[in-house]
Length: 147
Image 1: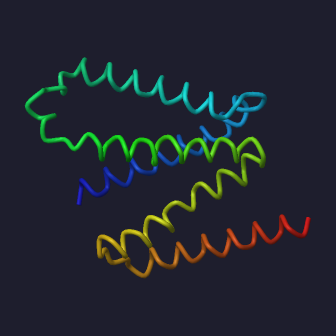
Image 2: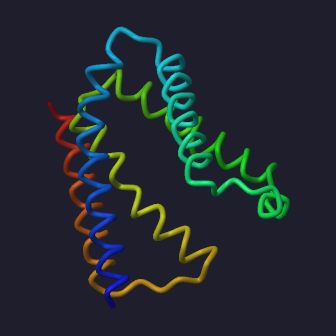
C-alpha cells in the first residue's frame, strides 16, 4: 500500500510540473519554429539523462545487451519526437489552457489502450472520472466553436 501511495504522489507531482511546463512552453514557443524547439529540447533532455546515467553508474554493457535498441528508438521517435512536435505546433496555434486540457486527456487514451492490449480492468471510480473528463472536453470544444 505504501508503494501505491508513493507512486500516486509522484504521479500527482508529475502532473503539476507538467501542467506548469505547458504554460511556460507557451512563452518559449512564440516566435520559434516548433521543430527547432522540439529538437533542442530533446537534445538537452537526452544530454541531462545521459550524464545522470553515467554519473550514477547505471550504464553497464552486460545489461544493455538485452535491450531492443530498435524498439527503444521507435518509442523515442513516436512518443518523444512526433508527439511533442505535434503538441508544440498546436501550442503555437491555440491557447495554453486549451492545449493543457487536451494534453491531459491522455489518461482516456491510455485507459482504452491498456484495456485493449494489456487486458487491464478499470474500477468504477476511474471510469466515472474519465467520463467527467470527456464531458468537460466536449463542453470546452463546443463552447469554443460557438464563441
